[in-house]
Length: 108
Picture (spheres, helix red, strand yellow):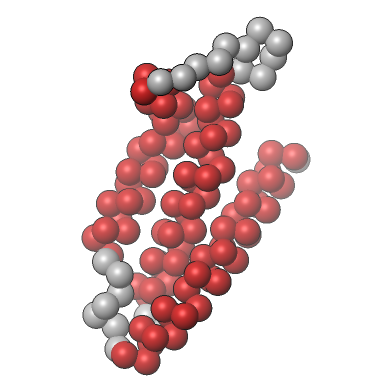
């Protein structure tokens, strides 16, 4: 297997983790977890949440890399067919592994 499809799978998984898990967690931590927490909303709150933990720049960087790598259309026909079928499964596995690692680090 070529390196490009593997990188695409890793970047897709990292983007999913950043958008679905890290960004909401950063928003919650930014608002606070104590009884005197302040609920925020609006575009300004989104901008502040994306700067917490550097989530916004990380998502932007991963998105740029993902666009630059393309969708793997330059790969040979059989390899592209194989990666196209199994890619969502591999992305889900990598997202699961990254989630387990993050939860392990948080609970340690």
